Image (cartoon, rainbow, N blue to C red; front, top):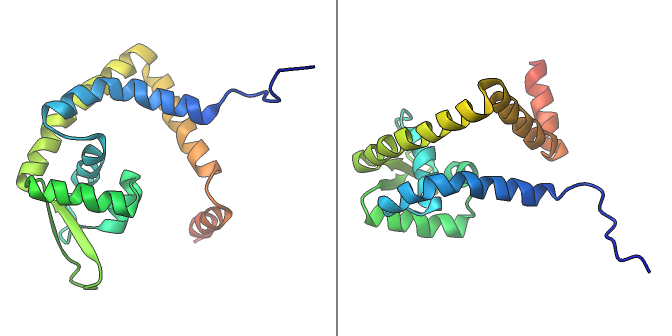
Length: 162
């Protein structure tokens, strides 16, 4: 009897999770220093990246870009609002929707943490080399695009043709 598994390829989802955890080992101590969870940091990073939007960011977009499910996002945002890191309000164009923006305290936190995180990325770039890090980013972008549902791929093709 053959006890080997039928798998030929390495477990890509596990490897991606392991790589994420390896990178986060450098980030988490800084997050904890400021009392932030991984999820809270992801929300702050999204809000920091969109801080120039005058109306804030719709919660659905925050959920997508921070990779949080709606119910989880609700709890995360409640804690962050309590801690003075974000402000929520109704969307002026559609009162059924909620928009979020980082407060000045939240943006200050993003700025403080970004220097630590960017220093780690610079270290990675120095160790891997600029070209290999760029190649890693490009390959990850390619895998993400490759695995998108066909409807999303078709939309992208239509946008490219326009």
